[in-house]
Length: 421
Picture 1 (cartoon, rainbow, N blue to C red):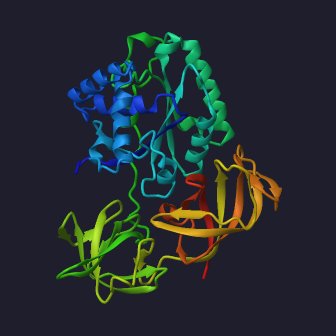
Picture 2 (tube, rainbow, N blue to C red):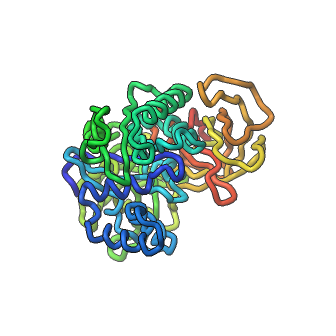
């Protein structure tokens, strides 16, 4: 593990605006992907008549390996700058990125928005910016990419900058927290080194901006919340639930409660990477053993918390929802699958309480009959079986969810309040 502070970074933006190439370039410039791998991809790209796609190939090959179910060394999605150790949480081209970005397992602290200079704001640009705003991404770095295609014209850069600034204002993003950089991921301009082609620009390179991001405070002072990914039986130890601590700390000797299974006990041991540790904190993947708990008492999707401040279990909850894509309309009674942390539970939208103006967040309509793609709304949701979830105002890590149906993420949201059962 790196001793540097860690940041989760989302790379967002419209398809074909160069996200993959940018990720490949970042990994290459920071030495995370060796030169010979890039060379190999360059030859492959040229053979297929796609010269110039070598950085994108780095990412796409990973995507293909993923499709085939080959496990990939996670290092491919990580890189170091002078100050931070970054994990890219949205590997471009990854179908489930939206779900992953939303369900907390990889909530990004900050994001790089890629907008092509020759194309400007496109539909997914809007969707991703809105998502970033809904999910509480704090700082946005905007890479105005493909500057090589517009001959590094300052006027093209200014046009896109103006267009994106308007978009940010529409979704109430604080434009003071947004930094614009003219880049070419393909040529490498203003990524690691300042480019001679943009002598009209005197700001940071992309890596400098990433170094300048504020440090993220780990949520150690929040109560323990540890969503369970799997439960194992290990001979000589017994039942070992495994998961990633989202907030708080876990120590041997703690009395814990698992919800919604509603069982509990005393933590005997905590392990990380097959070694026993006295305690673990946010971001740590742990296995632990709890006295008196059997393998069938708990399951994936349970959340472990302190016995005296157990995770809440929702009878119903009110949430702010953004519909990203749905072939028709969503009405009360619709029951898709909600993905929240490690849980997947069918939930019924009992009522659509308010339709919001997605640009401003103001109430546009009370009790609308339906909502459709592009709409934002406040809804009341009833899980079909017990679900542990928290208001995002209290524990943001357990307060967001993705809604899936028909094999795609159709909506994203955050929990406003929980009516406990």
